[in-house]
Amino acid sequence: MQKKYTPSLWVCILLDVIGCASYAVPVLGEASDFIWAPISAIIFYRMFGGSPLATFGSVFNFIEELFPGTDFIPTFTIAWVLKRVMAGRRTTVSAQ
Image (cartoon, rainbow, N blue to C red; front, side, top):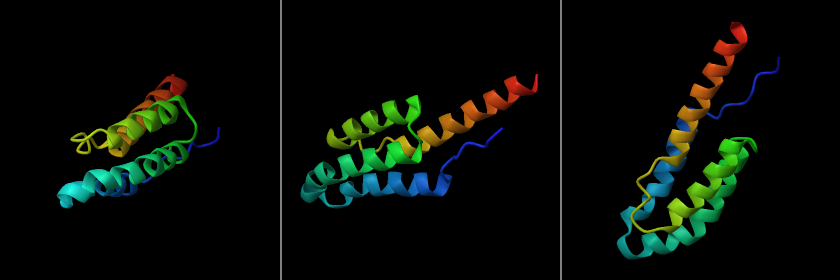
């Protein structure tokens, strides 16, 4: 059985912090989200490997970065937790 890749939690937290950094510059911040949103969505999809989680998450991440006031949602970290929980359930089911 091949082990599936799980991105580092620290990388996910760092990417969430970068997404929240737009709050540091009040006017310019929201404009920077138009640049960061597609980049973030591509990174998300590549990090989580083309799974249904990656597809849904990258679209959600793109929308979340574009809408003002939603940058506080830690999309990468939530996806990391979901991936770990799903991986734990798969190993529990396969061990039975």
